[in-house]
Amino acid sequence: MSDRDGEGVGGLIDAIEPGAFRALLQAAWGHERAGESRAAAATYRTALQSIPRFLSSQFRPVLEHARACVDGNDLALETFLEDQMRDLRARHGNQSLDRFDKCMATLLRKRRVYRPAPSFMYFPQLPALEFYPRDAFPWLDRLEAAAADIQAELAQVLADGPAALEPYVSAEGAPQDRWRELNNSRRWGVFYLWRAGAPVAENLARCPRTAAALEAWPRCELLGTAPSAVFSILDAKTRIPPHVGVNNARLIVHLPLVVPPDCGFRVGAETRSWEPGKAFVFDDTIEHEAWNNSDEPRAVLILDIWNPYLSEAEREMVSALTAGVGEFYGDLPAYATGAA
Image (tube, rainbow, N blue to C red; front, side, top):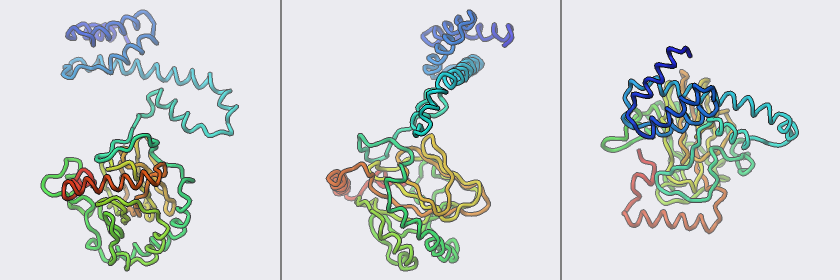
């Protein structure tokens, strides 16, 4: 930063309307001019958390300068901490440090914090995990063993053409803006095996080996919403926008079947690639999105299951609570079913 650039930032800060925000920037600027870079970054960080709603665009250079100062300090802090902790990390090299690494990345602002935000029912004191440990779901081995058979039956369904699928998003009236592009579109098409708690007999009959593989599936019972099992087909050059599910008492299983290159899936701060035949479990009440940037469709089998941290009594109570809401309204409202 040249002296001229610096004086420009200082002048802009002084031109901001008097108040706490300007006072913080002036304090940070004073630290910076005195060579106290760490104190400056800490104060700039506080100021950036309280930007006035209607701050004029003419002050954008001030915000850019503040962010650059904070970013530079974060990088210096990361280098310092890595050096300080190198020997300790080596001492625990035979232990999983994944949770600690995420903690440190969050501290350094390299990882954003996401929490469950279900549209309908929040069950407290459950782990806020984007992806759940695979070893908590031993029954997935049997499902994966049938992946080739499941994929073959899906191929037979898709041979009937687009008419075999229905749009996943089918909102009546005006859909939410995020779903406008996919509403009533087979670009995100589905073929239901179980739908909103009931088996789809005709579709299961078309896929007998898939139906057999689903016998080991530990279904959750939620009136009007679960269990569900569906082939989800995401068309080429299509993206599912960020969204959240309805209820963190349940989790979602993906069994990837057809995965072209350049497809991806994000849950919270963690992004993964699908691997055909390798299932994973995630909490869909944490913001998530999916994309297919390839020239071919992507296909996944999606199931829902109970969150393993619920007791049998809690599962029964959640089922009864969901049914009670449905009885009160005459049917579950859209926000409780995930309807877009």
